[in-house]
Length: 255
Length: 269
Image 1 (cartoon, each protein chain N blue to C red):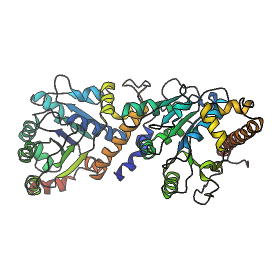
Image 2: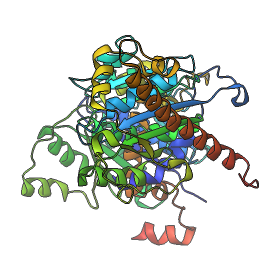
Image 3: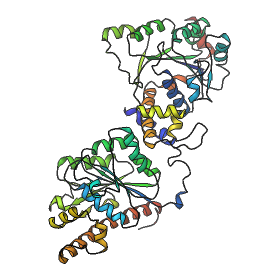
Image 4: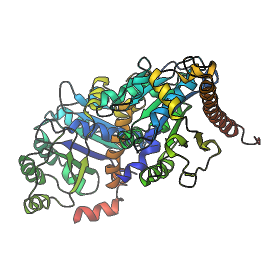
C-alpha cells in the first residue's frame, strides 16, 4: 500500500511566491493522476483555495481541531498526497507543531513521506530560515526553491557561506522556478483558475473562455519548465513511495 | 530546459478548446492559411513578394489580414496603408495583437511580412507559444515563404527552419529580381511535393519603378492593361503579373493536393 505523503510549501517571509509553487504542484499531481488534496493556512480566505477550490480547504494550523482535520485523516483520505500551503511566518511554528504531535517521528519511521518545499527570498535572512527550519526536519525531503516568478534577484551567495547553511540539512536539493511573463501571470490571477485550466482556455466552471492564445502559450511553456524541475527530483516517485512492511517498520523504529 | 519536452504531450492535451467557444464544426468551415514571408537577409525582396501575394489573394474578393514587421523604410504599410497593420514583437501586448489574430480560424488568409531583423525573434516566440502546432490543430495552414539568398546566413536559416518548424511548411521563393540568374536550388532543397519552390521572374526595372511610383495594385494589372504606360510595356507587365500569380495559384493547388492525399491515404493522386 502506498503510504501517505505530506508536502509543506512555506517560507517565513511573505511575497516569495509560496502559493504559486503550491499551484504548480497541484497541477503537476493532477496531470500525473496522483490524487491530491490541499490545505491553505491563509485563514479565513485562502489564495490557494481561490485557484483550486475543489481540492483545497482553508485551515488554521494553530488550532488543534484543524490539525486533526489534516493529520488524523492522512491514512483514510482518498488522496495520496496532502499539500499544505503555509502562510508567511508560520513555517517554523508549523514544523514545531508537527514535531510536537509526533508527525516528524512517524516520517522518520517511514510511515509517512514528508517533503518540505522551502521558498527562499532574495535576502540573507532566507539562509537564517534554513538554520531554523533544519531543527525540525528529521528525515524530511528538503527542497530549497529559488523562485524567480516575482522577478527576484537572488543575492550572490558566497560559496562557503552557502555551503555552511546548505549542508545543515541532509540531502537538501535546490529547485529553480523560472520567471513567468508578468502579463501572463496577471491574466491567470484575474482568471482565478489553475494554470492547466488557463492553458485549456476554460473558466473555473469548465465553460470555454477566451484567454489570449499568446498568454496561454507562455504559461504552457513556463509550466513545462517548472514541471521539468519536478521531474528532475522524481517527485511522483517520492510521493507514491510504498509503506514499509511491518517487519521493516519495526527494524526502522529500533534504529 | 531540455526536460520540459517530457511534459509536452500532457500540456498540449490540456489545450482542449484551441479554437475558443462556439466554433462551427470542421466540415462547415472554409480553409484558412497563414503566409509568412521571411528571410534573415535584407534586400532580398520580401516586401515585394508579400505585396504580390496580397494582391493575388485580393483577386478572390476578400482582403487578407496583413501584418507588417518592417521597422522602417519601403514597408508594406507604405503600399497598403489601409490594409497592412504595423506589428511589433518587442512587447507582449503587440505580440497578442498579432498572434491572437493570426490564430483565428475564420477562412481569411493572413500575411506576415517579416523583416530580417525580426526573423529570429518571430520564430523563437512562435516556437515558445507553440504557434505552428496550434495552427495545425485548428486546421490552419502555416506556410513560410522563404525568400532565397546566396548568403550562408540565409542558407543555414532555411535548413534550420525546415528541421525545427513542426506543423508548418517552408517553401523557397527564388526572386530573380534580386538573384539575377543565380541558381540556388541545391542550397534550398525541399522534401515535400507541396514545397516546390516558387519562381518570380525579374520585372524590368522600369516597370518595377512604375509600379512602386504609382502604388498600383498588381490585381488591377492582372484584370486590365494599366493606363499611362506604353502599350508594349503594359502587355509585358500584365503578362508578368499573370505568370507570377500562376505560381501562387499552383502553390495553392499543391497545398490542396497534399491535404487531399493526407485525408485519402489509400488513393493515388
